[in-house]
Amino acid sequence: MNPSDLPPLPLDQRPAWKALQSHFQSIGTAHLRELFAEDPERGERFTAQAAGIFLDYSKNRITHETITLLVELAEQSGLRSRIDAMFRGDKINLTENRAVLHVALRAPKSESILVDGEDVIPGVHAVLDKMASFADRVRSGQWKGHTGKAIRNVVNIGIGGSDLGPVMAYEALKFYSQRNLTFRFVSNVDGTDFSEAVHDLNPDETLFLVASKTFTTQETMTNAHSAREWSLAGLGGDESAVAKHFVAISTNAKEVASFGIDTENMFGFWDWVGGRYSMDSAIGLSTMIAIGPENFRAMLAGFHAMDVHFRTAPFEKNLPVLLGLLTLWYTDFFDAQTIAILPYEQYLKRFPAYLQQLTMESNGKHVTLDGTTVATQTGPVYWGEPGTNGQHSFYQLIHQGTRLIPCDFIGFAKSLNPLGRHHDMLMANVFAQAEALAFGKTAAQVRAEGTADWLVPHRVFEGNRPSNVILADALTPGVLGKLVALYEHAVFTQGIIWNIDSFDQWGVELGKVLATKILGELESPTEPAMSHDTSTASLIRRYRASK
Ligand code: F6P
View 1 (cartoon, helix red, strand yellow):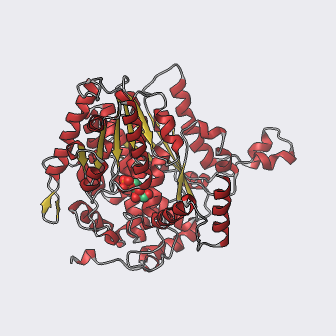
View 2 (cartoon, protein in one colour):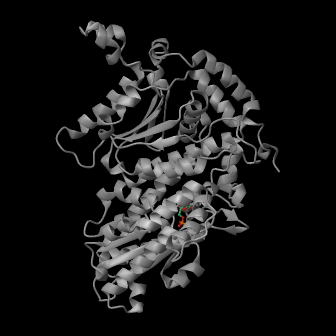
View 3 (cartoon, protein in one colour):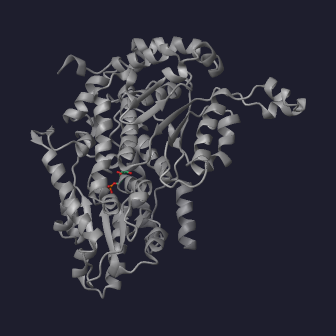
């Protein structure tokens, strides 16, 4: 083992951590007004850019020393060697003994990455080519349904990473989509989701993409079976229709075949692609059908550009590293519980939901890689809405509530739908909100406006509320790739410092097991013998009595 691969000291024993603790004593209460007054250049200095993504992080409660110490912390945590290990294909997902290679999904053909001695890149490109040829056939109307009609509707059935990436990317890149095709996304086991998704669709023009890494996920399999029944009922019951109306996206050929989908119509991927990191794999088939293979490849090139930056840029200029470190700074030192993601771009309306799985399933962990309880807080809660809607609902709490909520504002220089003054108005709000949060409005300023004394406290804005502003030229497929990769690697950065496994998700298991057991009890024709606590047992009895 390379000495730099040795596990780092426990977080609270790393020298930079200790230095950050005493540094926090001096800077923790400093106001952004003072920080800007002391260092008027900070608005230009605390910025970084790469691959066309610009980050202004000057409105954070930091000084130059904070960044120096955070970068030292990253170094003392072994971030550099862990990045290399991920890109090399090492099995860094320890609890599942798997490589973590979403970066291979967007690597050019000329690269080579070995997993268990085998180069995975040719397989990645073979699947991309198969997807492209299929997507072209659907888009051109060449792929015909059972009755000879072209496909007009594409329904992705999946959940978690097999849904959130596809739906987020479809919404984000709708501008580039083929408009004579309708796209729907079914995820919830609630029958309403499926029923509403298909209620105005014709089975003979509808193609289902069953997206599931494992092909055993209860919600997805239940929806897929209902889709099969719905299709066959509308197509005269001929089983051979399934081949024309269902394709599978999975790593599990055996389960795909036992569902009745010909493995010829299966798009594969690999166990080294985590569900929440899979939108670049065959799981992105709906995206590719919507925007076309060329745009999909442009998206992958965007991801790759950010990968290269993450892998090669010095940490103090490295966008994902900076973003990850700043989140950790607030989470562990300011005790911030949540991070708000505020895209000022309507097309990014599902981006906060997408980031919820990416960040919270990755870093919602309470033990380190060696199984000991973490000494600090780990992954914060992510949430958000596109601007300006949030301003008229929850921004009140961000501005004047009692909690510290670091915000990421995301904006674009150009609108894809220029319309009168709309875009300038939208962007004016980005800059105004970040300014208001940072600098606020003092009691003296409020009084000077002639406000009655009793009303002054209500109208004061304390300010000192941190934010990042992320800017790009326009929301192209490539820029979307860069933004997603930016957050993926920020999550990685944090996970390495916390020394947790950002790539497993054992926390979803217990509920699944209990739900399977309870389902039997809900459906039992006779009163089931139950071994639950009294609350769960009486809820089950009540439901059985009234269903
Ligand atoms: O929620 C747990 C999880 O395993 C996610 O990590 C994953 O994205 C989702 O379920 C769906 O899994 P699959 O693609 O195997 O159906």
